Image (cartoon, rainbow, N blue to C red; front, side, top):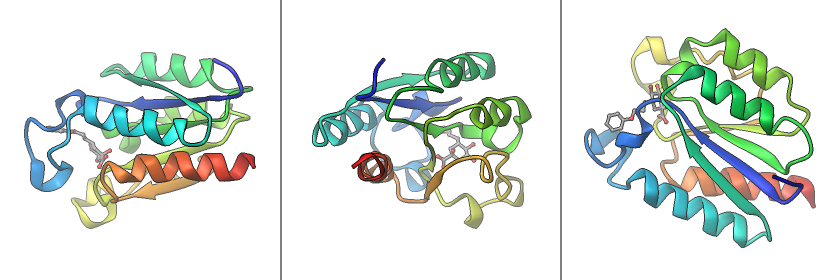
Length: 146
Ligand code: CA2
């Protein structure tokens, strides 16, 4: 990873994208989403390093790995958004910009999804814009660099 890297991290259950709940998450698979990220990054001369894990500690390790030097982190923490102080603490330790992304509008869903432990420690949020929201997050990171 270097200054041209955008680390795109997807959390628990996002490997199931396209399999169920298309009304909420759309029809695209995780592979489709990652291709959109790679194309968006390439348009700015950046490289998207896309990773997914169902494990909180793995996501924390990856956030720590990217916390300095790279262009930024795009983070959809999935359900950990609403539960994880530990992931929040890892994001707080980042000197690079971190964009919180959600496919769905978490504020229009069940009350337990309304609170994000990440919201006040991230640099920017893109919420409820589906897969194109990831491209918007990468565009935002690229514009911030310029
Ligand atoms: O809207 C988002 O991007 C979420 O971060 C997605 C998480 C959810 O817990 C957050 O509240 C909002 C869950 C992703 C689960 O994705 C699935 C996809 C297909 C089938 C089942 C789950």
